[in-house]
Picture 1 (cartoon, rainbow, N blue to C red):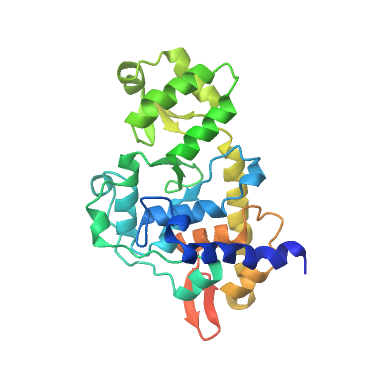
Picture 2 (tube, rainbow, N blue to C red; picture 1 turned 90 degrees about the vertical axis):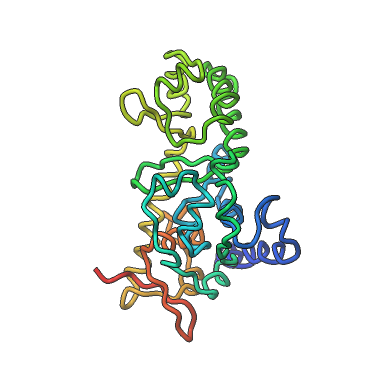
Length: 294
């Protein structure tokens, strides 16, 4: 057994021990049991910063949050502003996370509390930024705003477009939490010239959505998206190739990951569960991951 495989569970178990020793250490100030914020904080810890030379901010996926906050409606209300107006409600408790999954992933499931429904969403508070990842209509990446600001400044430092990027981070980022921006909004509200908007696109801070509209983006995020898509398919393939197209969670996490799984097995398992790409079945031997019937 390789040293890397031997360290897989102990390393993540260390997070659980530290969390139990002090909840504030596990979730930054403002989070807590029952919050989507605490779930995002746990998930970004799984993000392999070194893989991208620490050039990307840690990214959690919306689907991953659902693996830790089973009440999807409550999770969306905590994360995204104008959720009720812009989205069709998802049935509460549509997917639950068995305790055995949390034990194997060494992450505690966070159950929604009604009190959080009355608070401003994290996106509205400006604490998180949400980006469209592009490989799926519902594929949303969630990034803590301070992480986003720090990494973008670092990547763009000394470049010809650094001035436009700094202006964007100082004026647009604190004032607007949208996923995308319109031309009149950029030019009239925030005073950007067309040349500056072009510089933001060249910097990777914006990507073209359609004529006169741009998505918020992360410079260099294409590397992450490529790794994520390949890794998701590889982990699904591990379950698909198993007998009866099902595999114990403990067995899956104990295996050596294929070369395509560069983001880590636990990172992808949260996505598969939250995106409902696998069914979770409780058995006497532990949680079983099973491909849904087609």
